[in-house]
Length: 458
Image (tube, rainbow, N blue to C red; front, side, top):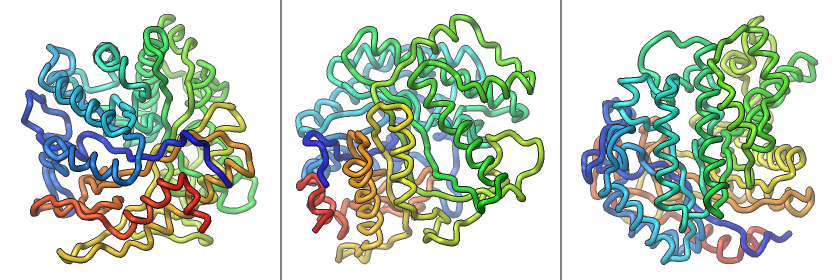
């Protein structure tokens, strides 16, 4: 039960959930900067103040033994309007940021977009529904590759790109501010973002020796029963939400089920020959995904005629055989192992889970470390599932990155939902001192990393 010698251990975050400094260093506004605080959510102006405190965070990661950090460049920090003049102060910030990682033996992985559309592009063009924003993103991505491609060897374009296929979520994360939210428009956003990904991936392969992957939010979805309709819906959901993307990441082609669906619905997605040519050249060096939980789907809850993208919206049902967190996410390490296998055995590319963790409401008494045995249990069981996938199933796994292992704002801006092995001392409406405090899980994770996983078997 061994992992490869050069296994990547690390941490994943986004810029808006960590950086703060929303109006410093020449940064322009993103769509997040206009969102106001609510009862259970902070605004995004300070986050965990990593813009000013990232050296302290890097020191914790180095002490843990981490050798990779996946972070996001804020588009509006390096290009305040999204399609205007470059902000050299913002670019210099990331240049120094990257150098500090490398000096600590931590390899950077850059993500170009984690849902924080520059406000100007959202207000002017309505986000990724518009081809002008596709052009702006490709321009931005190529510039970042030109600036950093000589020292950053791992890249992502979009965080959890299949979220652009999810009803409601797609419009929120794509900068879509006005207009009807139709299924056809959702598929247009899906297509436009794939053109963006292909353009940047092809550019990286053309001019650098760096590697790039597409990334999915992969939730294991089981049939609620052995009823054939439950089985069919679970399969179709997997095809449309996951394998449709993986086919393009790996082979540069859309799945036949997807093509037949848009033909049957008579969608006009304004697809050009140049766009198809760009996608046809697309290849991935490995395949990345996030994994947190599983669920089940019950066909009796799904109305006739809805798209596979919408199945989970109607048909999600709690699995009675596994535990559920206080955020209604079901804990399922076996689902993690299954996904590692489904990706690797079908596409035969190395697999890299780059988000995994458990969000829990925690309070610090100001003195003693938080006793987060539940977090130790969660990561241990998922890492044991990964070990079994490698050693018993033959899956090639490059590494394991936890999500927000130094506490950050949740995706909804809720500081109560904590994933970290390091506590950050702030609440939604009280910034306190933002002190970093290791939890009990910190020492456990350190032993796991520094033994390259061997400590899991003790």
